[in-house]
Amino acid sequence: MGRLVDGGDEKMNNRGQVFAGILVLITLFLCGVVVALYWVEQGNVDNSLVSPRAVFEMRDELEIFEIRERALAESLAEEIEGEFGSDDFILEFRERFLDGVMGNERMTEFIFDGLIFNDRDFEDDARLLGREFLDANLYSDVSYINDELVFSRNKMGKRVFLEAVDKSEINFPIGFVYEFARDYFISENDGGVS
Image 1 (tube, rainbow, N blue to C red):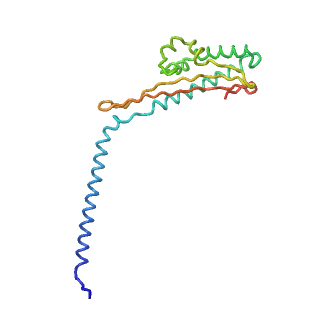
Image 2: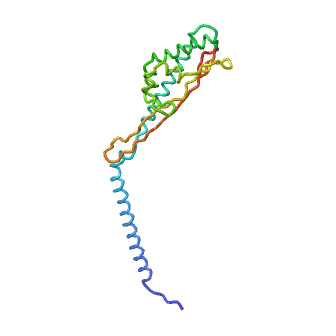
Image 3: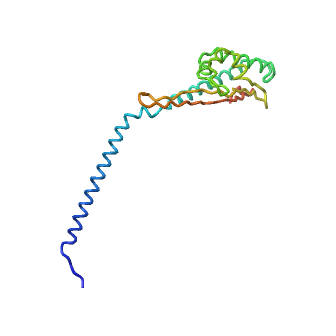
């Protein structure tokens, strides 16, 4: 009934080996194409990527600024004599706080450098106004609520431009605006600021 063919398996093995060899060559060719494209594109990376370093630096500067704000508020809460939370206390706290901020060059430089206020560039105007800007716009609210002095910094922003290192061929600068505000709560008992 059935007929045995001698050598049929050998032809199948030869075809399988040739096919496997062709697949290996195609795979090696495609791997070579990927490696070549990687090396070619590696030269263009600086032109297509921007570093977020400026954003991280600005965030670190904000944290340092807030540490200085908190330390100034704590020292004033302890230094000012009189009834905590009274109108005279709040007025003296506010005046001395604004004087302290204006007297600290690092704090004023952080505030004024690249300042965005009410969705517009405000750096030059804020530098001209100086203490008046801080008084009327930035630190406009100090009140006494629930046995705590509530002290607020209104929303302000910073504009940072992120640019690629090598701008020779392609350059897509990214404008970044970061807005922040802060409320501080000062209690009489521990003089702490939160």
